Amino acid sequence: MEINKIKLFAAVILAVGIAQPSFAGKLEEVQKRGSLKCGVSPGVVGFSAPDAKGVWKGFDVGMCRAVATAVLGNPKAVEFIPTTSKTRFSALASGEIDMISRTTTWTFSRDVDLKLEFAGINYYDGQGFLVSKKLGVNSALEMSGATICVKTGTTSELNLADYFRTNGMKFDPVPVEQDSEAVQQLLAGSCDAFSTDSSKLNAHRASLAKPDDYKVLPEIISKEPLGPAVLHGDQQWGDIVRWTLNALITAEELGLTSANVEEMATKSTNPEVRRLLGSEGNLGAMAGLKSDWALNTIREVGNYGELFDNTIGSNSPIGIKRGLNALWTKGGLQYSPPFR
Image 1 (cartoon, rainbow, N blue to C red):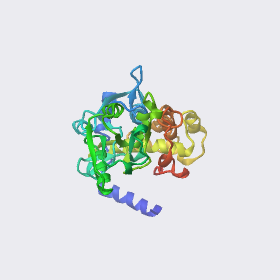
Image 2 (image 1 turned 90 degrees about the vertical axis):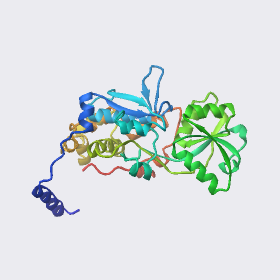
Image 3 (image 1 turned 180 degrees about the vertical axis):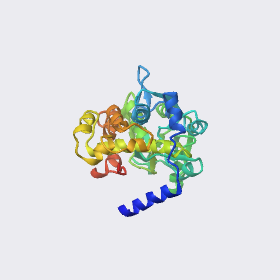
Image 4 (image 1 turned 135 degrees about the vertical axis):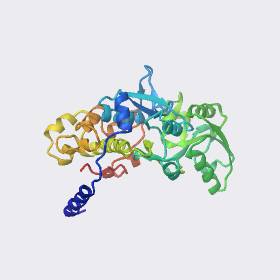
């Protein structure tokens, strides 16, 4: 948009008296409470699981901590609430949680019918199959007649039916409520395969006592754009979660890390770095946040690449490659709108 048109648009807004945001709603509720209630998976190593000391860690946990830092200035000010595939949306609708940060696929019906607002895609995924090498198959197309564990109430359940129908094959579904149940069924030989998001399959495989006895088949049978979600109706809260994710992505692109972000806030001459970190401009105030909200978040959680590598990527036992989740400048799909 041309500068003159922007000025004209701003003048029209002032002329008709459109009210400025009051910053009430979920933001005020979370700040008064002093903690963020974040819905996570009950235990997927690398994504969201408590360690031996009961401290929640993982990629999705990091998103919760990022929002808590942006809003409250404290990455520890989070109450992690385990949710299942069946309870996650009702927990959000009832107000039991303020946001979902667990492997949740953005779909038309969830967005439009369930009235969820997805704040972006923090992991581009796809559904796959985890099998025992003893099964002797190298492709999902060799699995006609197989028994397959799949979680109820998920897109995985529908994708599985579509895939086998499309390829003229039959299978026997073994419905389960939790990932842990599916893994136990697979280990016991009660199902030939476990089918869910490939990221989770790699995480579960890495946590097995004998991971080399199992493999993830090469087929990806669906698009699973995963991301944090909030309820429709509170645009400002959605903006905060969305731009917190964007801040992590942009930080990686701009070379900002947990180690150098404070120094960059004072020394960088890059205009976008200075706007993002609150060294100039008023982006924080526009969202009802402090000027250094993004600086604090990046310092405490790291940029997107740091969070990825330390939880599920190259610095973790899971070792998932960035792939589609690399920055757009490095052949991936991770791309943030500009901080301007």
